[in-house]
Structure formats: structure tokens, C-alpha cells
Length: 318
Image (tube, rainbow, N blue to C red; front, side, top):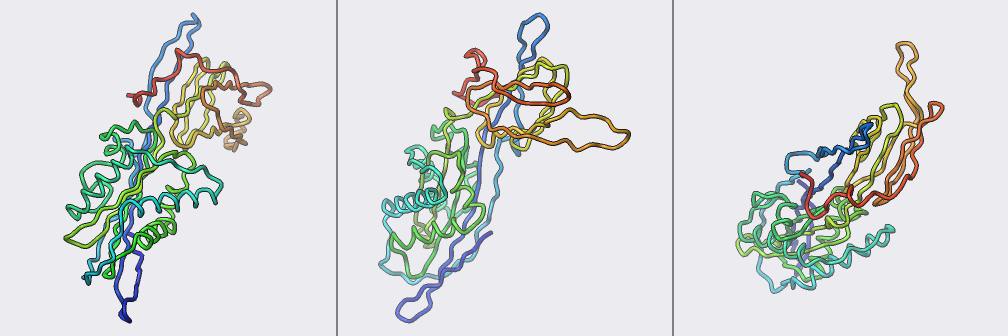
């Protein structure tokens, strides 16, 4: 749990305030393997890449705590201006880091508002407070996701807030927390949805900031191994082995960088030899070929992926 104290003053009195924040994520990655028999026919099988748990979610759930009595004031933030300021501040932050802005998406905004309303109505806090993950909530609203990231927070002050004060404190709290900052600066997200909701019971303002990349923007590439050797490589932290005469199709929503050995492994007695590696950032829709010559390995562009071998991006691989 991350608590960021926010002391305020009002008529010479110290007024207590608190900001509590949490992060969550969901991602879909898949691989398809095509083996190439000597007859020239193609056999196809599918495998799902490990993604943390059975729902494809990797969520850090940060609990909330600490209730402070509030002196009623007339400072009431307006939801529209508050959420717009959060989006604008976030895009200015991304621009300063050399990243593209995210566009407001109606479905993500609806998803964020529904969850913020739930937390405000129940005063239950956490990424699975309603029994679902961020990605499951987005999908239930009709968002066909490739990647979903979520920042949440609740903010309290006995002095109340203006729209500018609330948006500033929420944005700053997320910005100064490493996990939330990482979500805000994710280079692969293209869309966002932000919402706030007020709890009459606890006087808390609950906030939800969603980031997404639609499934239609998933990156797909192939690797082919025409050599007589088994070749191991890594994509997104996962190690794969590509057998001779096999094509593997990767559909990625997060990191897609390929790391592979630049030389074949050579046994030297009983000692293990650490091989030098090379990296390549693949492009969408391209097949890459492993080339082996004089015990050296290279990876080069081969051709565009044939249409009949491209995965259906309308839904995640089973």
C-alpha cells in the first residue's frame, strides 16, 4: 500500500488529507507453431504464452486504509474538468518523455466510470474489488483488448478539493510512484479512460485511470528455421526453442524484442560457454529467417507473412 500524506491548511488549522493508490495490468500474448514436413504440407498447432496466471493477468493489488474525519466545505470538484485535466497532464508527461499521447476512448472511460462508481458505492478498494480484473471489466464493456493497464486511487481531504487540486494530487501521486509511472509511460498503450466518483459514506474520491491498446494493434511476426540446428531465443522474457524446418508465429501485445545467440554452442570439455547474443526489434507482419553459417547465427528479414498464416485478431488465441 502506498499512502502519500497531503497536509492542507484552512483558516490557520492543519487539515488532514490522504491519497492511496494501486496498480494493475492485463496482457494477451500468443504463439502459433507451423512445422514444415519434408512433403511440403503444413501442420499447425497453437500454444499460449505464460502470462502470470490463468486469466492472463499480472496484478499488484495495493490495499487501502486510514479513514480521517472530514469537516464539510463547499469545495466540490467537477468530474468532467477533473478527468480532462488528468488526461492532459498525463499526455504532457508522456510528451516530455518522447512518447506519443494517448487518445480518450469511450469504452475505456465507461469501464473506468463503472468501477469508480462501484468503489464509491461500496467503499471497497482494490483492482479486484468487484471480483474481476481490470481486463475483464474492460472486456465486459466491449473493449477488445491487446493490453490493459490500470491505476487506481482514493483521495480524501477534510477541506475538500477544487477540480484542479484533485486532478493535480491524483496525477502527482501516480507520477511519483514507480509502478504507476511505468503505466503512464508505457510506450505501447494508445488509448485511455479516466473517471472519478464520490462516496457520501466515507467522503473519499475514488479515481480510475485506464490505459489500453486494442487487439487490432497487436504486433505479429514469424521466425523460420531452415537450418539443421535447434535454435533457442527469447521474446519478452520467455525462452523458446525453434526446431529445424519450423515456423513460429508470435502475436505480441507487450515487449516483442527478439534476443538470440550469434554463434552456435560448442562443447569445450565439461565447461559451459556463455554465448554472445544479438537483439532485433521485429516489424508487424514480417517473417524473419535464422541463418546458420560457419557456426555463426544471424536473423534477417525473409518476407511478408502470407495472409493464410496470419492469426485472427478478432479474439485472443485459445
